[in-house]
Image (cartoon, rainbow, N blue to C red):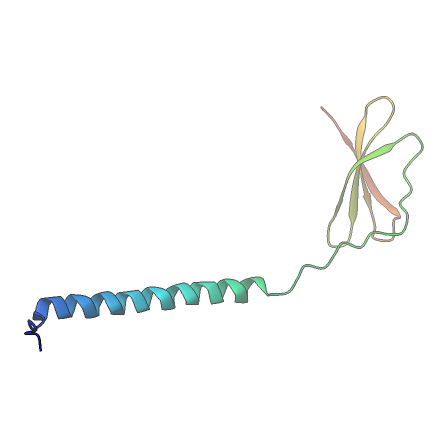
Length: 102
């Protein structure tokens, strides 16, 4: 049998402290991961629902489309380069036209 040197009290304390801190860090990391999973598994945004067809005035080309809660916005340009924003109801009927000035 070998003569074993007893472990000093300070070394035993440090070893236990490192073990406890490691376990605490692992639990903290698992908690953060769980919170991210819970947060991002929430309700998914509903897809935008556009009418089957949107009719623009003659000679205007759509550049961008966006949707609000109860309206659709279409940015258009015409042959002369004038830009307009057409605000439409969700069924595609016109509500308002705004001319974009430079």
